[in-house]
Length: 205
Image (tube, rainbow, N blue to C red; front, side, top):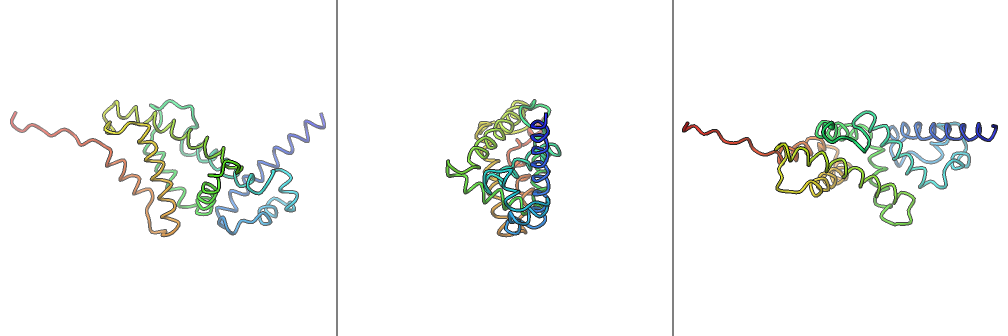
């Protein structure tokens, strides 16, 4: 029983660390959020903080995973999901607008995504699975809208989902270099570009 109680306390402390880390990084930025600062935010030493994670890299990976959980609660369902119930455009744009308010988390995501190209990096599996899951949901929702004539079918849904993901990820880099970039407006314009024009009226009738 004591062992089970200790395990539950460990899980709770780990969750507290991740939740406070989200706040610190959103406020201080990725470069300003050292392990020392994150440890102080939850009343631990640096060694005490890393007791709950195998490494600094795993800590940051789990912070991103926690961010995804929080975002999905507020802006969209986790897969699997009925694509017909997903307000694709609205939810996607809301997430992108929210990202503009948490630059530190965007910096962390972008930095870690590059490092995670190494198959041995602790974040490699996270990014592979995250990207696959997002494309699965996005492609299914796009296919529904293509069948309804709301999105062009000149490009298959799987390819379109990759295009949207590439645009969003690339815009984050541009925005970090130049905060004047309106990421949400640019993605919204892409949705507009992929919306078929309404049929022309036949005035001869």
